[in-house]
Amino acid sequence: MTDTSWPFFEALHRALAEKLEIWCAANATDTHGDDIDAECRSLVRALGDAGFLKLCVGDGDKPPDVRSLAIARETLARYSGLADFTFAMQGLGSGAISLAGSARQKKTWLPKVASGEAIAAFALTEPECGSDAANLAMTARRDGSAWRLDGEKTYISNGGIADFYVTFARTGEGDGAKGLSAFIVPADTPGLNVVERIEVIAPHPLARLKFEGAHGDLIGEPGQGFAIAMQTLNLFRVTVGAAALGFARRALDEALGFASTRKLGAGTLVDNAVTQANLADMAVSVDASAALVYRAAWQQDVGDKDNRRAAAMAKLYATEAAQRVIDAAVQMHGGLGVTKGAKVEELYREVRALRIYEGASEVQRQIIARDLLKEHSLKDQIR
Image (tube, rainbow, N blue to C red; front, side, top):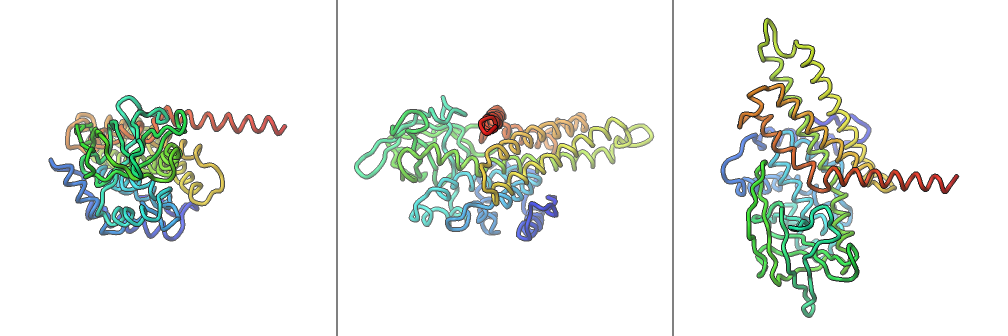
């Protein structure tokens, strides 16, 4: 459970952590059935009914509280990867509207996102464009007072079940990042089709979309799309680290429980010095991840400086550390660790994508290094 006694937290965060713990114990299951789409819809509704999705959309013109989002994702991920996924996508999918949408757009969509009535999606990635978002190929052209979108998006989470897609397209105000804009495209818009459902190692709704003259509702001004996309990703980047932290905490709990009961000679696995060393390393990684995640979340909520480096550090370290912690838990379980149905096997599949989406680890290293070099250069100029 999140240690909310740390100075990063306030009374509202402590109350949220307790409420989430109770809800997850009753509603977030370890196993999934055959119909992942139906389970995601059910989870969105349940999270909305419980009031947790209000955390994703902020309060009026105030952006979401990142510490609350991080606590929610850590707790949900510790219980169920799919529950964490459904919560996170409500935030990421509607984030551009929260940050840059008009009063009309906010009134139309955000209450539905918060209640679980509408499922959101964030459509940025394309078949030939992943991390290099500035060079996406989808186009949007004016058609009188409207905009028409043409192109493809792929690996879109909630693809096929979303009620609307926040979609990024090239409108041509300039080269690269300067020529992109953001749009809301309802799922029932003529010209928008789900052309392929994509299966990945940790099942969740994922699809390739095709836009053929589909109408989009412009968010902000033409040419602001890249900035809106980056602001949205930066807002939720810390929470990816929080989800990884939740997975790692669960893996450590599973490892402790298994090692304490697994017979080894005259004792148990936990009596072995190598096992104890591994558990110690796992615990250090978990606590270090928590410190980076909640420092970055606190800084994002109350700080008055650029938070990109802290967010990148949190996302990078927590996701990479979670991969190591979970791998160690699988190794400790032996054959059971790679047996389908074991919790550590599920965690092994769940955590892998976190090192890729919302900025791969390689991208986070670039963000950190460039910020360090910029700071170093400024110091040299002052001397």
